[in-house]
Length: 579
Image 1: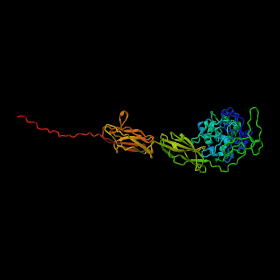
Image 2: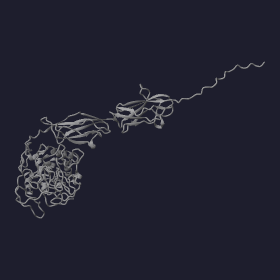
Image 3: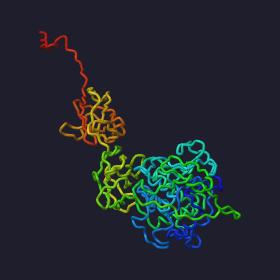
């Protein structure tokens, strides 16, 4: 576990004094509804003891300044920020969707935690400036990795490599990774696959946001309780200043936010020597600047130490403001509609040829790109998306449409529902009906043309092998019925002639428990002949309509006879009695 260390590096040269001022200005940095575990009183950041163990970030630096001290609404009011409020209140669309999706997922699996998405947004702002202002692709993955400094004990925790460089590219020491800044060893435990792509990627905002939420909820915490909230945040990064900063942003976002296009969010400050350069792959280890150097920020200042040592007083400064984006905020998402067939059908064990496809539109009726959509398989079925998943998230393309991944039918036949909903929005979902039908073959044939013959009371020596196909491909697991029929015109079972052996070797002339193998082949049990000679018919049918009729000949062997060599004697008249 990482040892505590005394030196903290801070982005934007914001001191603890400024943090405290901002906390006071923002109504004690307290979100509505949070109560103290003991007294229930509303208060600011507590002096909770950081929990033991390695924090999520490995105590690597965080990047952002405190929110503007001049908030659009006065402390203590409940007026929401307008849609065109400050740039700082704008959260990039995909990043915002990831936070809201994480809140919904955790609310379903751990309702007692009460993790609000605004808390995840506060941590994401402090750790990476909302993934560098929303520089993520359509799936939520950052365009380039976000890496913290090398955790080699020089100003930071000393954490030896735990992932062989798989996530952070460093095989000697660990580095915090991604928009929520997980160190690899922590990610190995808490990593999530929230976007359903089969990977747990700390550089993906959906995966990272859900992992952060689950980490904050660890230990049966209720984040609606102030002491639990403080302890959870301190577990993320062991710093009272960090706690106050996150709480300040939490309160700020609780007062109101709005969605902005990806890539247009406020970037982390890049003006100082200890700053993270936006868009770079790595976070350089900062070096203190000489006092008074023009154009630079003061070097890092150690936090207060036990025993009365304090930091030199500083003059609070208002963080630089960034003008709001010049682009007009998009209209809110208003609808999701089907963009393909409403019914999907597949044979058991096969992939569905059709995909559940939807289109997302805004209030102006225009399609919306880069909008996450959740697809869920609902009902008593074993049909699943790739990887055995019953739920997955996909993102709309430029035309506003998105298709669910391919669904593979299981062996359970019947109907189920595929439900599509817009992530982070309370809009009516769109449903598709999926139907799984039994395995079938549209053709069946015998694999040889050898005449099948037997003597009365004997058995047919040749094995009868057949192959079933569906649309030209081998049909696996297809049910086949074999019947010895009366005639081509009368397909009912015969009561004489060839037969299969059933229980206790009794004659059986219909078999219904036959099934093709993986290669579509089927070998029939042995066929026997009774005492009747003649030509008989065996008919095989498959689910799906495949049929074949085979002739069976029962022929009595010839009994050669030897013709007489002399004519038979002619009876003569009886002799006359002697005279």
